[in-house]
Image (cartoon, rainbow, N blue to C red; front, side, top):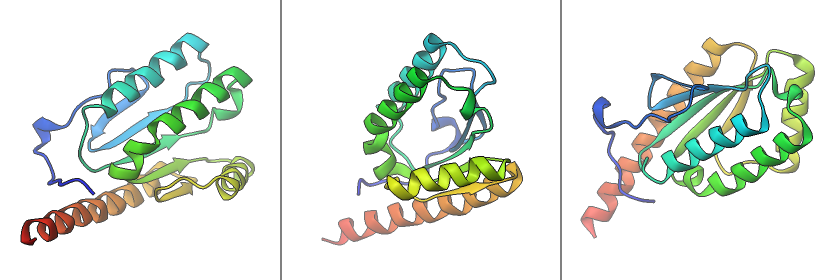
Length: 157
């Protein structure tokens, strides 16, 4: 694990895309919109991947998935390919992804997909944003502690 300490607030990087909220960084929030073009999704994916090349610190995600069922097949593929490319960053730095899925049916679908192909980082589905944010903060705190402990171990060798 790379060395990391919690950066000061001014060191956190924003993801340059309107779907992303930076209100609680280093907990990043994003929501799939009710309607999005393939080009808009491609711009979002590029923005996240560009950010990941520079953001080398613990983070957590809160992702609103209510509109996920409105994504067309091409968009689902684009996002799946993005997640594969993004996995290296997630493995190193993602303390956890809290997925907001208010519908019980959609929560079941997300759980089933992750059971078949589980992410390599903590994740959990929630009906409410407040619960998702609370869990994401706990996961982030644990990731920061893990990075600090690893950094101290390396310093003593």
